[in-house]
Amino acid sequence: MKKLLLSAIIFTALVSCKDDDKMNNQDINYAKLPQEFPFSKLATVNGVDVINGGFGSGAAAHPTRKGEFYVITDRGPNTDYLNGKKFPAPNFTPTIMHFKINAEGNIEVIKYIKLKNPSGQPITGLPNPAGMGSTGETAYDSSGNVLGTDNYGLDSESIVAAADGTFWVSDEYGPHIVHYNAEGVELERISPIGVNTGSRKLPAVLAKRRANRGMEGLCITPDGKTLVGTIQSTMYVPTKALATNTTLTRIVTFDIATGQTKQYLYKQNGGASDSVCDITAISSTEFLVIERDGNFGSQGGTKKVYRINIAGASDVNGTDITAVDGMKINNKALEQSTWDEITNAGIKPVSKILAVDLVAKLGYEHDKFEGIVYLGNNKLAVFNDDDFGILDDGNGNPKAKILPKTGKVDKGTMYLVDIQ
Image (cartoon, rainbow, N blue to C red; front, side, top):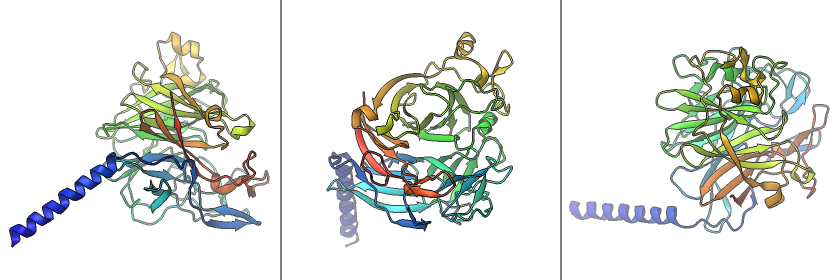
């Protein structure tokens, strides 16, 4: 009887595994894309609805289940005010949304995962205090009252879903790379300022990122061994005034097992106001990277994806990752050197070629093109950050974020596009 029962259990498990394999290997129905994510109302401020959106600051595929994805919000809805930001929903917790493309080809939410501190308490998107990754920004509520800080606060911008069920998240504050368990509880925080003691640190020079221009992109190599992050724009190395090479930004790699880092230079096609956003892996050396400006697609916006290769590029980490100004050329920081000076010093940036222009290809309308996932076979999933449906009205108050072409409120949307 026991043998029969055991055989039945084994048979059932094998059938289940075969069914799972069949599901994993079948073609996913992407024909209904683009599709908006489901939304609810988060708050109403001065008559303006703030939607519970923001999903699309970063994106990642489920490591084993085809057709399932993760998207992440940033720190929450905010507007510019004085020397910082107003937070109309200051208790907002940066959140991961796990969803799938179901059999009908529709987006189906599986789970929301709120990020938490090491004690398991939900964090906020409020700035870190001095010594913990502060950008110098002050947080205010909708009435202009000063809010506090959050030691574990995060301006999350990108996400990696690891094979062990954990997540790696990059942020714009520290900048930090934070490791979370499957339920969103912080396991480790890695930064250029040694927030975590020990040998696992990011290069000290990364602390000279501009406010709101920290580690915008993050992915993992297909072998699961290395994290690869992109800094959004030129850093202020050695100072804002002296960082004159406004097309230079950096890519950093982090060996998960050893903590060893490397840095590579990336030459932007645009200028100081443009952004290098999310990154997704093709191989251990080849990646797809977003370059965008801040304009809507129908108003001359630039929304492009480049295929880059770090093989053959120079590691500019230098011999000491604690050097706050990093590697120098003729006693000048890289950011204050021209590309000719960099080339003459024998330093090679990553190579790059255009993979797709979303405005030309799709008539892409959104301003904040911030998430990509490579699906193989030259297929790319594309996501946008909708800013929770609001923009700054110029006085620190929210106004509805309206897409100029359609006249509708901007909402997080998943697209599929072929790339070269």
